[in-house]
Image (cartoon, rainbow, N blue to C red; front, side, top):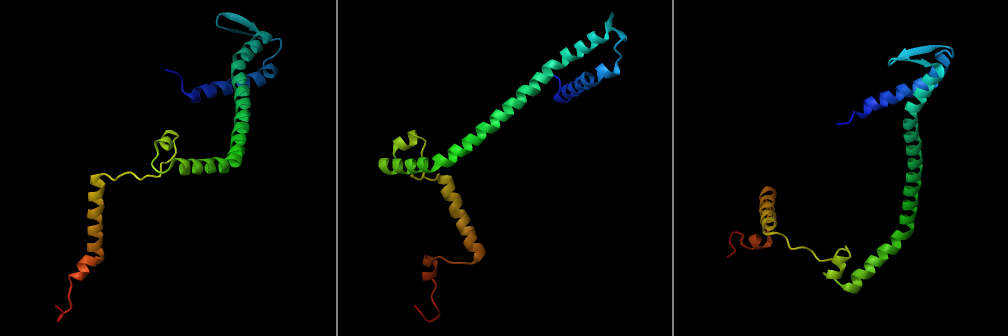
Length: 154
């Protein structure tokens, strides 16, 4: 499993700081011993710069990609504004040419204009909801109203 991006970012920050400040802080005549070897100023600076180079390259490439991506998105928006009316008109013309419920429209990915038949469960649920609403609102439908007679009327 890879390292978390946060630790990689800290490492990258550490390298960037070393690249920026090591040449001035670490004396030019100084030597440093680590990993069983003695390193001169030039060797230490070259080591840090070589370690940081891939990170700098990624930053440079990411920046260029972001600029290109921004330009591509802007071009797409402009093209969409210019061509949307024509495409919408074309879709309308195709719908009127092929007619409602045409398989050709479905193959093109356009709405066929034909409503789907509701499922039986949906019909039952809608009827139950309508009955419950009428009960809550104390309203009667036209057929129910016809059954009510005023006193003396028969």
